[in-house]
Length: 419
Image (cartoon, rainbow, N blue to C red; front, side, top):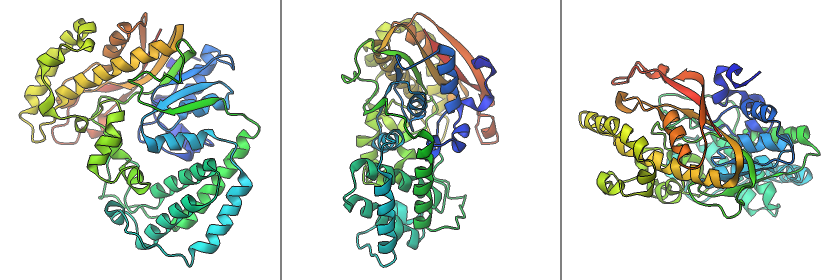
């Protein structure tokens, strides 16, 4: 069986929902652990290899590597997801300490109080009782004398609880207040069940050692902690060129834990550490095409980008006729520029002759098709990769065709293989 025979949802996180540890956090744009497993088998990877993951997300590649005893290193720019991954990779937490903590909070929370103000956004997403319990649990964990890895473990359980007991779904690209969740358990009961479910999951990896490292780092920049020519392969899924703001997506959890407090802090503390993936990541007024053409990226990728520029111009003209006037033309150029930097770092850490597997989607901003996967393949060749192959996984984007102004172009989700 090769990659072409994998099921069409391999580029989604559906498989992860029923797999121990992988299901500890459900990311908005994840992919299946089965894809990582299949690549490991096809490439014959073992404990002498090292997998590089430049967009660690919720840790699918790293968790899969560790379950197979294969060393791996990864970068993640968001503090929230960095801590999620740390919890998912540390299987040495003291279970007795966790159980003792649960006994203490059970006795404390019933008569507990919380005097500080709640974040205004969260006040609109949780019942009063659940809001109190969520904040009480958060501070009880923080104030405890537990080892740090136990606190990280419990905070991940609390992050899951935030998703499970909200009035409206928060685990989708943007909060949809037209949909209502109907949970029967309180925040505390949900948290307790989640903690003990995670403890049960640890039994499935009992005796396995930690062989992975996660860094809070922007993959567009050199990570001095990862040596040159030290990795055997890369397995990752970069942001898609579809205007999805990952900083915005995670704002409920980010605000709750105090990583951010408002829109400005999301920009300063989160977006600046991420590949440009949305029009909220930059100021349109600061972009000048002719000045941008003096960049190292454009000079090194001139032939690729010059073929793209007529479509970029078309997108810009269409945007002037649309109510939102989204600057997708600028977004596309910044996106490819950022991915060029990611590829340069990827090429640095990979050994000569190593492959990279990337789960990617094409895009059609304002109905103008951008062959994202192919363009990235061409850019990768200008970063030192010898060639590329594209394997189509499935068609995507068709469920939105009923929306006003929605294009009817069939997009695809693909695996881009660099060598």
